[in-house]
Image (cartoon, rainbow, N blue to C red; front, side, top):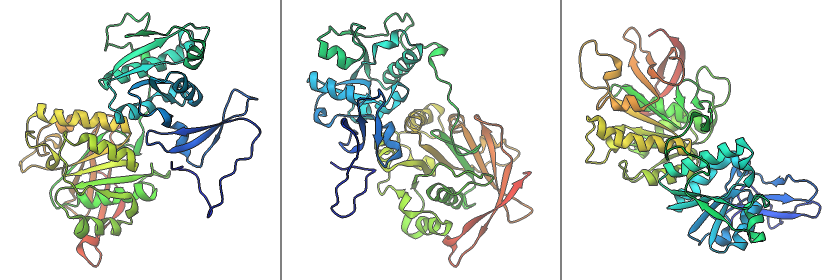
Amino acid sequence: MSVPGFTRKGEQPIRIKATKGILLPVTDTHMRIRGFQIATGGTPKYLWFSGDAQAKTTCHVPWSAQDRERVRITEGVLKADIACCVDETTLTIGVPGTSNWATALPVLRSRQCKEVYIAFDMDWQTNDAVKTQMMELFFACKSEGITTFIEMWDSAQKGIDDALLAGSAITIHASLPGNTIVEGVRPASSYKTVAVDWLWKGWIPKGMLCVLEGDPGLGKSTLCADIAMRITTCTPFPGEIDKPVCGSVLFLSAEDDPGRITVPRMRAAGANLDKVFFWDYHPTFPEKLAQLEAIIEQMGIVLVILDPFLAFLDSEIDSYKDQNIRQVLTPISKMAERTGCSVLLIRHLNKSQGQVNKMYKGTGSIAVIAAARVCLYMIQDEDSNDKILGQVKNNLAPTQASWAFEFEEGENWHDTRLHWKGRSEL
């Protein structure tokens, strides 16, 4: 088993200096140890040992029980381990606290679960906060198409581990006990208010769809190279002081060869090429969406760029029909929300003439604009060599003032890089 987050010098073993206690390896769905919880017995809280900051939000999947088909979700590492030992028919996975219930969803997807059993501590009956978290998990599993059940037992035993060890009768419920709401209809009180996260504040939302439109040959791909540079090198965006969300970028281009054009362009922009990825296979969507999601989760992708978007549609999709486009964009949008990965759709402008609203100038259906939470446009300033980046639509923040920038040419035409000049009134 591999141990991310830990370093070794030569053959020197890792040593943990601590008082007597229980060492609990936290393993993920790939059977990798992500860290350790240490129960010392002197406090109800666990010590944490790992060099991986994200390991604390890992859903624990006991490796010894991964071959079991029946899946249960509970709270915590020790509860999951004990439940797996006592109930040999079920893989019990442990989320790191009820508020981190969403960490269970990638595990369920990777196992292609058809049904799941939720076994949170019985204090949810008296703790409204815990009950709300359980409701959110319950409905989230159902929205994934998973048949979902609630397990209950005598409240004298707090957790599922206590109930199994005591031999208590466990009852199974197909709906939340005492909940008279029609299945699939939720009260507003069950939703958690969530602030919008941004890759580029006010411009590119995290975990959502964003569109960039502009005429062919204007330099949209060069702009994308600058965006990729900032994400892969943790460089602030224009107008920002704080570093952006750092991570990797997946660039899918149907028009440019990576070796001849895109990689030199990324290098000229200053991107970290170890964090810019290409998919050699030309995927189409929604057919290959599951593979895309797997790549995002395994490679740590925070931004996917589809250039141009319409080139990646399945052959039976009519790009001018709203219903067809929504059949593609709705699952892509849900995938972005699940993974927290932003998706930037590049779209060329059509050849229409006259005073046409920018909202309707993009090639294909208006449903593309409707599905995106933010729509950006790129135009040429007719009075200078400047390019202008502005917004057609912003559902998440006030419309941002446009930016002006210019291209600085290198020795070769594909060595062109971008220079931001400041705000523009266009």
